[in-house]
Length: 312
Image (cartoon, rainbow, N blue to C red):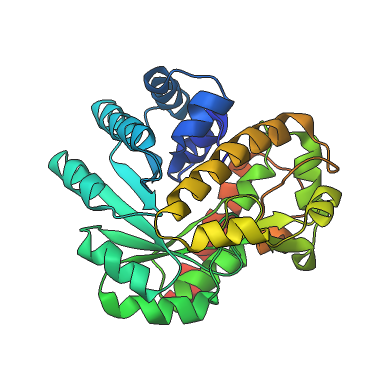
């Protein structure tokens, strides 16, 4: 959800029955909040409902890791007890969060990363499939569940869910829940530029492409004129650097810095000729910008109806 997870959106998701998950760099760098005060703001806006924190834990730079450790500890001090980890070994997060009675779920795209999450002590897995936005996987929703279920952890579906019936379908596969991103960008509470939201509303599945030019690994974005001009593959030098054991971290740090700056501007500018707009293939199920309350009510109604059918 970087850079779209503004405090008002995160709080609205929690207030209406979900768990709104905030992203530290988005909260501080994009939306300009002191980290601790930002959490307190979201807790007030949500009516003291549960919040979650996304911890991207790849140790690409020592200073970043130290900052993430501080952020996790502050979040725990402020009462956050649900954490989502990605792109690294979650052991240190699981250890400190479990000491406080919290829960850690780990983003994975295939079984080997699920196994590493299990070995790292996480409580559940978030299965990022090929229809997800951002760092999407390569498996279908069903195939990825079949890979991960034998590990014995609860599995949450991430990718391809916008309509209520898509949530019901994921639960029928065996998932315990769903993680949604793209659907919540196209809401009134999200402060992303209206052009970004309207691009999501107007996009079809075929408008979503994967580019390596954002972070060095494929990221699902809307195929804007800027993306068409930039291309989808990393250049020869970048690909060489990304293959090296030592140079990979340096190159990813460079990509991360560039993407943080670019996406910050994208969130404010709304110019398809100059901007990245991350989104998943669930755009096919989004036909309007609506309040979070309406989105959540649609899911509640669908789950209620599905429960009635199963009980007959």
